[in-house]
Length: 331
Image (cartoon, rainbow, N blue to C red; front, side):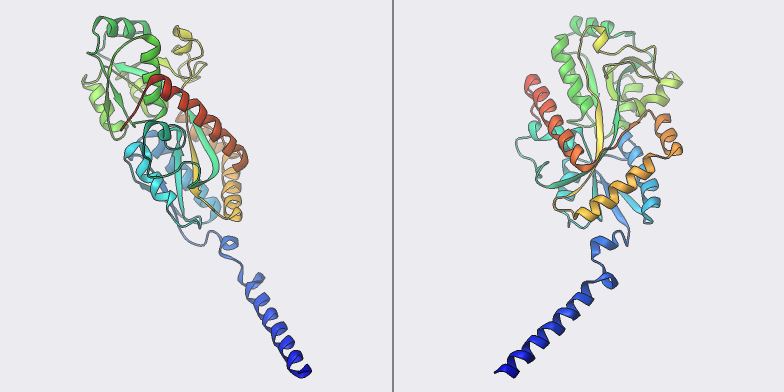
């Protein structure tokens, strides 16, 4: 019996040694090797909009830092819900990531009675990526030159004005609904799947106004195709110093600043999260990257995952209040 036990112990020891060799430095875990092939970055909105443009810039620069290609894939629909649900159900290995937003992770849970994903339980927050101002614009041919003009026109023509919604449930959409309530005006929302067609209809005079990302409308503003009459942050935008904010135009405290952030599926390995955040941190310290973002009116920002998680909790509280007060439901 002693010989048998000794033999068994020896065999177990040999097996443990072999296992240690197999899991040691020679064969690191998949998370430690991350990334060793291309990454899919899901943008849950249409191509060509501000979020899509920024995602592609970030994908290129962060991909270079990681030494792997980041492929941007657009999966628009349901206020970002289709793309968000896709990533929420993906394998948590770091090769399928999401550009989340104010809508997907701040407001949608209050706008829809049923979501195909849970914005808290189905995701791993990695970092906020940018915040951005919205600008209220009218066609160049419009007789509206100020926010007061718009309000007066709406009150004289109740229910006859309409505005474009580039993404249902976005910060710009909710901001207009809040503004309508605060100003006591009526205007119909016309939903679009992205800024492209909405802008086309605005320029053609089929829309009376639109609140959109400054970065998306900046070219039209410079060319004179649209007229900016107000911005949505609490302070004036440096790119439009002569354009007043909604807050200073008679609505103190009004603020509707959008953001986008990077998410992975729930249970993403900490090593993967750390690798991604460090790459973002390195890219965001580049003067060239900062200049590129400023030129497109994006206020770049990033924060560690734990801080981002706290930020998201505050956003849910903020936009939940806006949705309830404006009594908005999308289903």
